Amino acid sequence: MAESRSTSVEPEEVTTPSGGVRTDADPPREGDTFDTAVRTSAAPGIWSGLRPLLLRLHFYAGILVGPFILVAALTGLVYTATPQLESVLYQHELKVTPRGEADSLADQVAAARRAVPDGTVVSVSPGPGPTDSTRVVFSKPGLPADYTLTAFVDPYDHKVLGTLRTYGQWLPVRAWLDSLHRTLHLGEFGRNYSELAASWLWVEVLGGLALWIGAPRNRQRLRRVLLPRGGAKGRRRTMSWHGVVGLWASIGLLGLSATGLTWSAHAGTSIGEIKDALGGSSPAVSTALPPGGHGTSGATGKKDVGIDAVAAAAHDAGLRGLVVITPPAEAGSAYVVKENTRAWPERQDSVAVDPGTGKVTATLKFHDYPVLAKLTRWGIDAHMGLLFGLANQIALALLALGLIAMILWGYRMWWLRRPTRSGGAALGRAPARGVWRRVPGAVLAPAAVVIAVVGYYVPLFGLPLLAFLGVDLLMGAVRRHRAGVAS
Image (cartoon, rainbow, N blue to C red; front, side, top):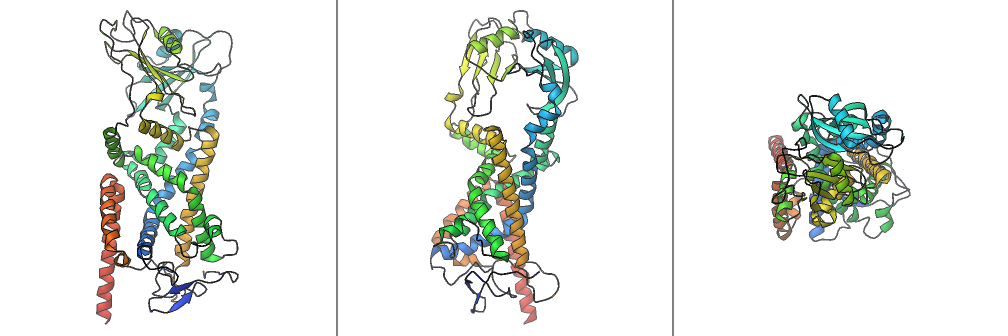
């Protein structure tokens, strides 16, 4: 369909390949360069050379990587509703009616063992409130990797309310949606899709910000940068919404990209190594018992003081809310009790408790974590919608909707750029080739070094970029060959 245009907005002049000048009010013509690449109002210098290169990268990344980012946004949007879904679907297992004093944790664990006779206790989480059930987590033969079986116990009569297959602390619906978002249920190979999206999202956001803020038509008009253009129509209106929404969503999208990369398969390894080198890894409380300690063969040893004494010791040490009690992993090691409140203000303190004496042998405060470890923890929990509760979920949903809209607007702009006078179907025009030659060497050389370093540590940014360059060179060679044959 032909592009509609506003007559209330002054058209902008654009230099055409033939050296002539036309305005945005004129229809697209065959052979025109991308109309925002070179403008008569653009001042000479670094930006006038760099902008067309950014535009070409933004265009091709949007076309080719956009579908992966779109899928990640759609699955992430659904994931934001998981707390409410869990509350509805698993209310029977999660909630109980308070009535008198709760039974001992030992009795509750014993009841869970009877329900899962072939399982090994991995951890125990007493209900943080009077209406919450106790979770007893088991490892069990036949479960998929990283999955466990959780028994939910009524603390008032130690009745087992049910058992569910869990992924960490996630119940089945959240585990399923989490896997959909991370891997599309394609296993380890599927992680590449979400890592590709995270690897390019920040590139698209930063490039788009530079293009939008640095656009000649926006430099002198702050309102055009911050708010959609009410009088614009067609591609101009679409571009206005695309740019404005991108501007307002940029901080959140950059955060999602960065935190998504921290637990990715390839870049995540590099990020972990960098964090280790900077001393920013999350510490763990020491489970080693002091000399002369009374550790035995584990939670079933004869000298074990029992899980109730361990829970009491942790409570006396100041641990509150949701806690996870982990039995000794081996002889001579301690119980670990860790807070697991991932909403602000986070409570992630942990203590080690001697199984023979019930005394705390080591304490680790979240306050004492390295700053980088705290930032990583907060970033991941915000990414998962946990840090600020419902407000966090709403913010994530708005970011996902905004990202979906921007991608669709981007494809619409591409469609509106197609030639309409040649007849037949055609794709939208790409920005002009060879624009990198306009970038001063003093800028291009260090930029290439930075891109190479980032591409090495973020391989699903570097490898697709090399593929883009290869395809671009091939297309250029084909066009030159056709031009030679035609002449």
